[in-house]
Image (cartoon, rainbow, N blue to C red; front, side, top):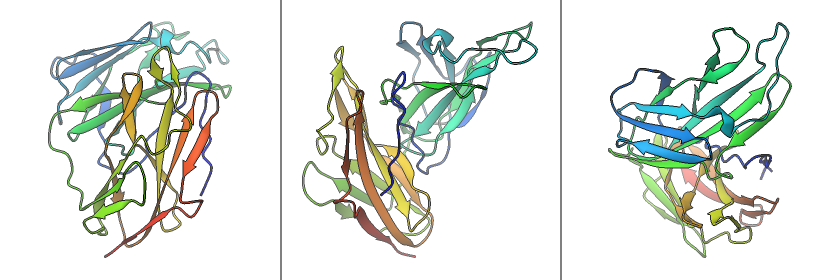
Length: 273
């Protein structure tokens, strides 16, 4: 089991990097179809229209939500930028830019971006400011990320692995190379780091999946619901035969951390040809 450090500067980053078909992303300041999401000053969010698979979604981001990491490089140009991330059903995140250079080249201004979900289900969005000087901070709702429901068909998973509140996980269906597995993890299974702030959850549970000895991928297991969290299904690719290891980590604002990893052995499942 590897330890994965999460940054707790402005918020914890819960960045999914599982494996499902990526949402298409791009820049489109003149989009007229589909829905729009505005991430406004004061950390409020406004959604217009309904998100649906294969329909464009316009993203507008207020740059004062991430005011840190500012600074110029040689020549007076800005040495910082803000990047958005989008993850579908816990899958590999795609990136998009929400800034552009000002007309005089001395600053950055907000620029609408467009993402196009490729599938129905859940899409998570978060943002990161970075600078040429090594600074970076996240806007991710204290690691929860911003989740939105997307209408449309979800990818088919050949197997489902369910982690209930207690006990060993249950597998339904066969894990087959080249397919997907749906992972459902009860948010009541790891409760040591449950914390709230101003009525909002500031704790999260991240899943880890490792096929054979390849680099582990991460995925979201839940999303905020009032002052609590609710479970969401994650879809993870299993591209080839081998042994799949799963484990989970909860973290909260303030540095609390706890693992569900079968005492470090991780939960093991076999992927057939």
